[in-house]
Length: 220
Image: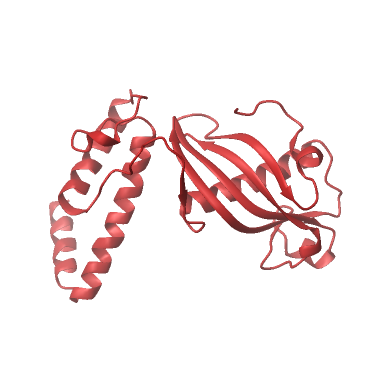
C-alpha cells in the first residue's frame, strides 16, 4: 500500500505544472463533495466548527471516514464552510446532486403514473433541462428542482425512450412541455434514500393531479 501511495505521489510530481494544478483541483473537488455529505448526515468537524449541524452522527465507522476526509481537506485544499448552514442556496443546474435529483424525480413521476394507470400506454415522459436548483442542508440534503417536463405520444420519441422516459435532446415536443418544481430530500443512511415533497405545476399541462398526487407518504 505504501509503495502504491509513493508511486502515485511521484506520478503527480512528474506532471507538467498546469496538469498538476488541474489534478489537485479535481481531487479537492471530489474530497469536498464527500466531506459536505458527511456534514449533511451529522458529522461534527473539529477544525470547521462553523459547519456543525444540530443533528449528530452516531455511526462510528462513518465518523472515522469523515474525520480522515476532514484532515485531507485541511492539509491539501482551500475549503471554507458555506455561510448560514441550513439556509437554502442556489446551486449550478449542472451540479451532480441537481442532475441526480432531477433523474430520480422524473423516475418517481413515471412510477406513480404507471402504478395508478394514469399514463396512456402509448405515452412517454419527456425529461427537459433543469431551470433552477436550490439546496438546503437539513437532516440530509433538501433539493428543490425546477425543470422542464412533458408527456408525448410521438412514436419516434417512444422508440428513443428508456423505461418510458426520453430526454428532450432526443425528443423535441415543446407544445406538450411545461415547467414544474419538485422537492426531494436525500438521506443516504435511510431506506429509501430519497423522500419526495411538493410537486408544483408552474406552467404548461397540469401534471400534479394527473400523475403525482396519488400517494400521501410525502414530506412536508
